[in-house]
Amino acid sequence: MLTEVTLSEGAETLLAFILRHPTASAALEAWCAARMPGQLHAAVIEDRVLAPGGDSPLQGAPLRYRRVALSWGGTVVSRAENWYLPDSLPSDVAARLLTTQTPFGVLLECHGPERRLLSADVTDAADHILDVRAALALPGRGDVAVVRELYAPALLSLG
Image (cartoon, rainbow, N blue to C red; front, side, top):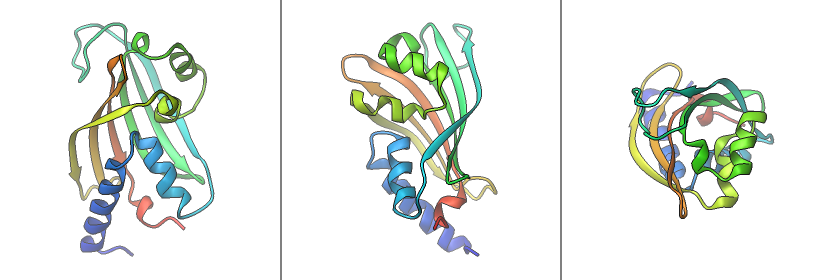
């Protein structure tokens, strides 16, 4: 059983690791692969068009909202909300977001994403130890998404 001190220290270590990667997907793949075999999988919970001018951390039109649960080896390691501008994405990425369960960050990897931290909080919630918000930009395209990522305590005990 992880103690509160260990949990907080582990969450801080995980946060530092995440911040060294261009996407949450890249960080999760590296973190999890070092601890047990598997593959990152996104189960899409919700994906819809948002009305312009709504209460969203990203403005533009058209605007989509995607909510996923990311798992590794059958264990949910993160839940994420993603507000994105499909017309600002490379066409292959926009199409695959609608037709696959591939994580957003995995689809962006070959396009050189840049991640800008908006906020990060270590939490003591039962279902997550980190609450991270970030903006993702692509070269020559500006901000294409804002994400909120909730990282599960299971990440500290994989393997």
